Length: 426
Length: 95
Image (tube, rainbow over all chains, first blue to last red; front, side, top):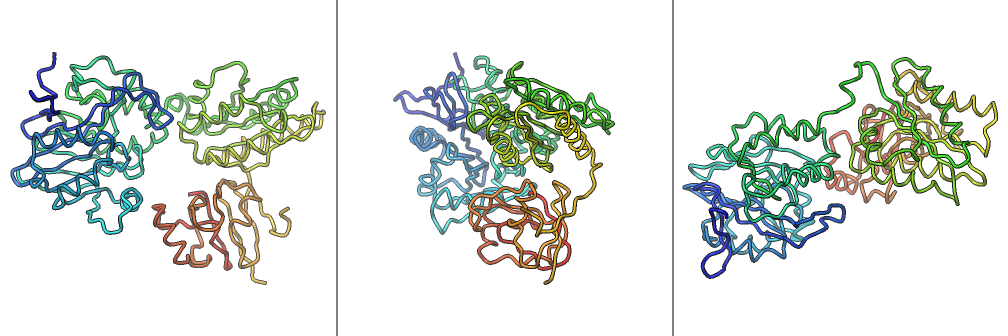
């Protein structure tokens, strides 16, 4: 049994104390099974919102999804009067945390809204109002509530561009937004009382934060030095038992794995292929041979048919270059290629080297389509894809070797700048 | 006719173009990773970073400025579908 009540004797939702001055005023959504189309949750989620009380003001930090506004307002009313609210903070503007904002602004019109610098244009898109009064803040900006204060940390892309965290030094409490959160609905609220949410925590990181590892590491530089008693995220358990463990786990998950095994001057190049009759495979082997000629390039060759997508995504995340070999079947690359490509949105691929090749029978569209997809994923594709009609000849195999060599040289910065006249471009 | 050179740093390719050429007219043909959406200066997909020769491009229009702001663009960013080469040396890469 929990040591706190979620409802009063009349069955009305009430706030839960995190300390004498900090309260949880969120809502539970136990029936949710799919979040944002891409995320599953086996027991729903919670939308956590908080109240911080100082002797000269009251702050509301984040709200809830619109459908859960009644629960949020009931809890809020149990701990504060609307006329006392001086500050509303939105740590990011995603609708599941801003759904009750328009109504809150009506009920507490005197409250000043604080959002991150990057949230300014989004706020207009969200509220569809022209005249919205707000104060944009950055790392180091503070707001006083008298004997409590709010200190802002600019933590962009965790996971929205406008994300910030809010720290209350007098409480040693970090309101982290979606960072350190997870979709796990448990009315016992605190991490030392809820059921086992480790899977949900890891799953949430893998799908929500993983594409932004670089930004996670930057945010941790701001968060790690803070004295912390409690982390209050916007989803899932409130982390009051050894909150530093969750910060350490984020650092672990965000640090590159394979790179620690490479010397600083080495780069990794992965070649994936799929082949019906062995022709694209022969091309792959020749490209592999060509790429191996360049010193300090660690080349690997994989047949997509022989593995699961998920570990391949892990490999690609850590690699410097990616070459894909695809045949063309009915005018397209086959499904295993698209399955891999559609799974890459969870990792950051920006500026990695890309290349495509493949054998074809009739028209050979697969290579061009995959090249476009790689560009769409923000890889650089400096060398046009290599296509061979049916069985590669000896000369074509040599072309494949040259293609691999050139891509490996490009990866190491050894390829000379190419100068083209505009009139010569097709 | 006045000429300019546009270097696409992501693929290490330089193209000599007549003055007035928009970056969009060249980048796809050479395979740079600058990607396009609406192609008419509205969506902000083709955001690129100008690493050299900012003044060798036409100035952003009021509308482009608005799209850059809405997309939280950095100060050296332009839309590849709008920026035209005026002359001299220009270096760009996907933002």
